[in-house]
Image (cartoon, rainbow, N blue to C red; front, side, top):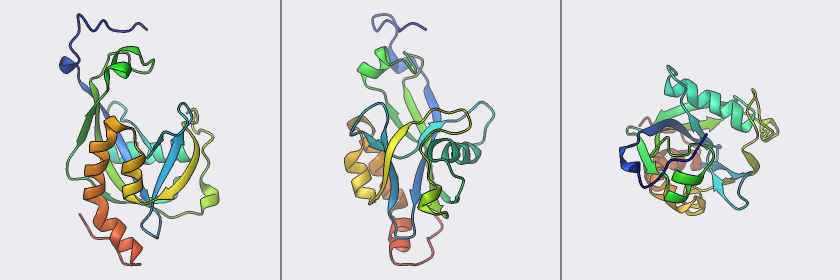
Length: 179
């Protein structure tokens, strides 16, 4: 696979990669965040591509199992809008994963409630997927926004705004609202 030449291909003409983002809540209204294996100190929520002909909900459940090793969660809500970010130039032209195939990612975000035990969480990679994370913890929505890499921050801020009513209800021990 070769890199694209930024002199001949305008990234603005490239498509967005369809993917899902998973905002996984515990019963205290905190969210699951994990540290990437490829970059120490880089924390994010699980996310991943939607396969051809795959429904976003099914992709979310597949990514849950692949990235954190458990299916112990229930979907509470789907964000009412897709959220996009563009890859920065240093990823657009040099990163081995996409190498100029996509402009960025268009994400369908899901709020999930974790229903298992913390012992169920296993980051070692599952169903043929390599481990993407080395550590994990629970955080507030605002901490997740603050810790995410800068080019994804606007997406995380909007996602946090959408799912804040769920976090607030869970933190008070109440049933999460329907969005």
